[in-house]
Image (cartoon, protein in one colour):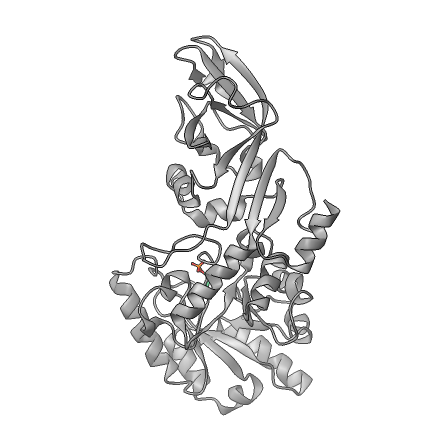
Length: 383
Ligand SMILES: *Cc1c(COP(=O)(O)O)cnc(C)c1O
């Protein structure tokens, strides 16, 4: 089970109630369009086997993963009527297993269409799928002319009943970007070729654009997990909190150096704490470095700068700003929470919140707050 304790050097607290509240907020906003959920990459690192059933209980029936193995990972925790869509496409060799499990592969290229049709003919049964078209991002999906030839082929409709036709926006997190309207217009033209098929264009960013982007179904990921897709008056509830344990505290004199490369030299007498979290836990190494780095831990609203380089399993922070007895060995300090959001850490690390979130938690103790799935409750009992 993914939530098994490996160490208690860091604690990742997940609020499944907040995930559900975020789902309801988006679902209300996009109605009458339906709201699916993207749970690829183990629900962005949060644990798909916990997140997916919680969302199913909220009424979500369409789940998007990236890979066949991710579909397999959640199929037994979802109800029979849940549909699992594999965004990265039909993996060579996975065709028969995909059909047996009734997963919906996204057909992204002619070769994938051909392999799925071959299987449908061989089995003598129609095999439903999702079709992706490229509307300008040049990543995945058929181009307009390939989609047009499929639409003109009556055998295709018999062999592969399409559940959904999708495209993906390149700039949905920039509401004013001209590409959004351009992609939407190209998608509308392709959709007209498949008039009876439901359509989906919006990720989280798209769900917060105008209703023209909602089509029949939206497929948010990051917003469910508490990250605002772009400045919008609709606020997402934070979902994760990360705390790291203090392994050791020492006082160092001016001039004493800290960490690999001895990059940091104390400018005056300092109190330094070593935390049990490092880059192998997904905490970005670039947040440390010379001087005080750019990264921070927090305690009771006080910033505690990272000093020296971030190691694989630990990193050092400066506690001097706190009262001497404010923290002791064994205590936890905040890395993500009310004082520091995923967006703050992403900004300091020069990346996006998605990257921070998906890398976290492999060695952290996972704690559940809010909505309890049976699996999460059972796990907590074991702990
Ligand atoms: C990852 C992904 C999403 C979800 O994107 P968010 O920005 O996390 O909401 C939706 N659609 C596709 C095709 C994706 O790859």
